[in-house]
Image (tube, rainbow, N blue to C red; front, side):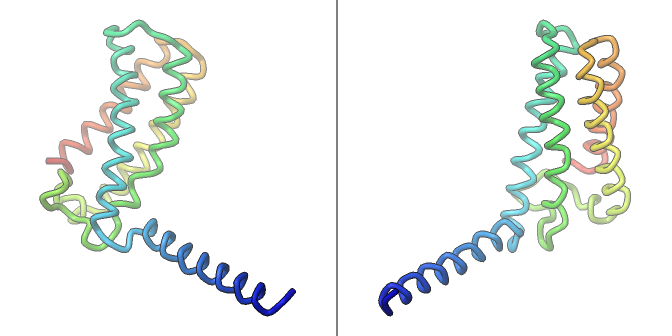
Length: 156
């Protein structure tokens, strides 16, 4: 290998390393705005999945076990995602969020609610795999109650 090739490869690797670190830093929420956007996006997708399941539970849309199961599995996977966006300094209430200051004032309660919520979401996915709407309804309602409880206390 000649000196020019070694220099070019070294420069490319160093550039990639620097760019990679910059990308990792961005995803590590170095600023509150990114953290808020991240959690809002995750919660929005979760809401869409939950609403679609709710329409089936209420009978507004015909129950399709396969679609419900997919929505429940997606919801369960997503249930782990948004919470990191609440733990960044400065990611508190402001003009760009409906989150109330009570989240940070009652952090331990909020964190426990996220744990309970994730457990509810995982149970819903598990029950949805069975395909019985009669079995799904009470589990769905328990998850909905958990959602509402958190929104009542922590969302404007």
